[in-house]
Image (cartoon, each protein chain N blue to C red):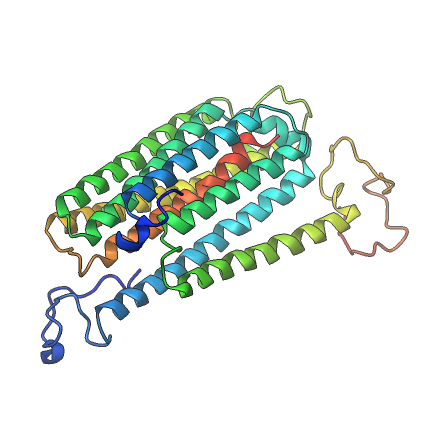
Length: 231
Length: 135
């Protein structure tokens, strides 16, 4: 992501004369190449994100194969309507994000600010719903590892239930951290957009933050059925 | 997507395409939630993951612009998922072929299936091929 944090107001290089855009960095051929390069960097980062969550998905799959009954029983504790609600919220936020990118490309700053604000609002709604879900788990003792204290499971003394909630909190928690990070970068882009720093010629941060936001959505698209729906 | 010819003059999927993508994603969410209330046996997992993959592909192609982007980004994305697939595949081949994984480590695990020797503290009579440590 460091590729996007250009030194905006440092343009003392005399050889920038053919490029009026202050965001242009002299080691690139032109603005298009600069944009493409940033984008490739972002995609490489997104691949590492996929692999990060991929490892957890593999672990979850293996443990589900090992404790099938416990996992089935444990997943009944998750509230399917809340999971579905959060899915809709995130999908909608992805839509507002992509509309923001389209507005940025056309140089429509006020629309861009509006769409970014809508995306941040959706992200906050997601976290609020997540908070209620977590509170419910905490009350019932549905906690990871040796904190697990729920009574009345069908298979007594099995480690499967605690294992399920270890993975549940690890994966949804890590995803939640990504949402929080997303809110932070969205706010950063929002502030820059309000200052009028983006135009049709330069909107790289909007585009890259958009890509990040979509990968967070994409990960949730897999988390939701695996945790809430699978029987 | 009905807006196929529109793309040519309204360069790269405009708002209409994105709205159609959103509606398709919401529709698929309803389908996958609905399908989860019906018991298809082991088919539920397959259906859920299949629909999730369609949704993920829609997000990548339209929201993430891969459809109109330079191919290098799509290649990077595909490489990521390819290696994730290799990772998944070999782990599950491994898991599926080790029968002695189940009873290891955990005392008090009920329903130990299979012909594996049950007594956990028994000194290993026959050399275990996988070299799993038993405590």
